[in-house]
Amino acid sequence: MKRFCIFFCLLHSFALYAKDINVATDLWEGYSSKDGTGYYFAVLKRVFPEHSYSFHFMPYSRSIAMLDKLQVDLVFGAAEDDFENALCSKYVLETDRTDMLVLVSFYRRYGSLNDLVGKQVVSHLGYDWADLLPEGTNYREYSDLTQMIKLLKKGRVDAILDYRADIEALLAVAPDLADGLSIIESVLSYDSTFCFAASEKGAQLLIQFEQVIPSLIESGELHQIMMEQVESDADYPY
Image 1 (tube, rainbow, N blue to C red):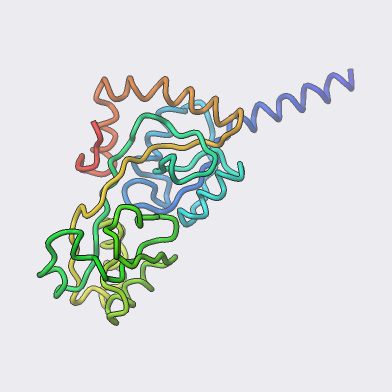
Image 2: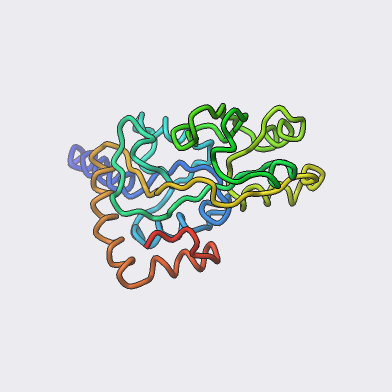
């Protein structure tokens, strides 16, 4: 009886553990906010209502490493090319359009991506925009947006690739940084989705995700979720 109890308790503990989805994500306004709201969170809870969730907020580059090492089950807003070993859905959740913060003087003369040739362009660690920029662009990554803006204002960099919502959220609490800056919208774009760990648990989560998402697309519910969370469908992929 005692042996049976030990076996049952271990089995029960495993079942509870398996029900918890361990998520790593960066902070993105309207998509994965610190309070657990946003488009990605809403999609997660709609697709996996029977699960519990553990959220870990970290720079995107670190979340990629965590998934590759099977230390988390899921990363938001990702693409297969970002990982060495992951299970990414074929269903796109967002066409990710990146904006660019520049000095007003550069904004006035900017015409296309070719104007970045020979310029110093920076972005967040792990965003890896280099392949989408024209040859001859000098691209680097930093961990902190405030630091990048200070470098921009000192003339040490020419442009920052980031998202308007995140830029405006920072400038709202640090308005002294905003003077002399302008945002150029939708400079780059790529498709992003949910990527799961290359494990048995990750494979099961992917199967459920790809069973539910098509019906949400067909019914219009996915579009509705984006409108409710982001208040715009500019990045809706369907």
